[in-house]
Length: 288
Image 1 (tube, rainbow, N blue to C red):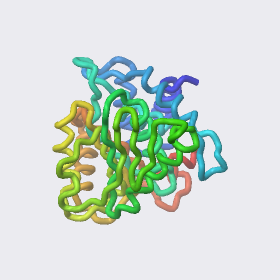
Image 2 (image 1 turned 60 degrees about the vertical axis):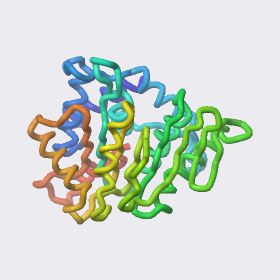
Image 3 (image 1 turned 180 degrees about the vertical axis):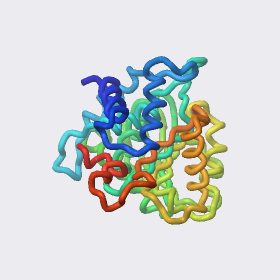
């Protein structure tokens, strides 16, 4: 099945109730459906690019799972499309500036981030920077390391390919592109020019305004993007939750800016958390 057809099937399943989903995901899928159907005057989806992403991932091997062939499941294809394939009709530039993924633990969000990062690192025709960030640099490096392992398993690392694996970095020898790892501190984002900034487990960030500085940095490059992804945290006053809650409110009110995408997987307020039938709302991998 073509990637865009798989996304359409996923969106239809959410709309019909065949796929168990919370209200926030249902609303996000409605928004994507309208864009795919050409009903949005501002944004369209680049179906060819989505197929390129899916085909690239299908060449990778899951090194932690017996070298099985990687694939993007429908909900992951939807995320990949929201991040890399939404474009402004006015100028064909990428429409998404900030994407927020909130999801239960064990759904492969870091692996997905590593695969999409490697796609950008290896397919960009010019130099880009990708930065993985977390409260601890070792945690941030897991995504960079994972991307490096995918590259090794597919013959992309020297001497067979252009990727050089350095200490906490991946380096593309032909385009001079870079993927690195950083800990979130007060001045972490100063001077960065990311094509893609990965904010790992941002629900546990402290009081520093790393996300605010990254949001400012997004305006330095036309294609710059911020991917925030986390399991739900308890500190609802940190900078991530201030952004996340505003996105949720605007999504529900139909006022969400087109350059922002919240994919908030979770049970609804009226759900019984002990009802196993509702768990897939927060854990889409339970259904695959």
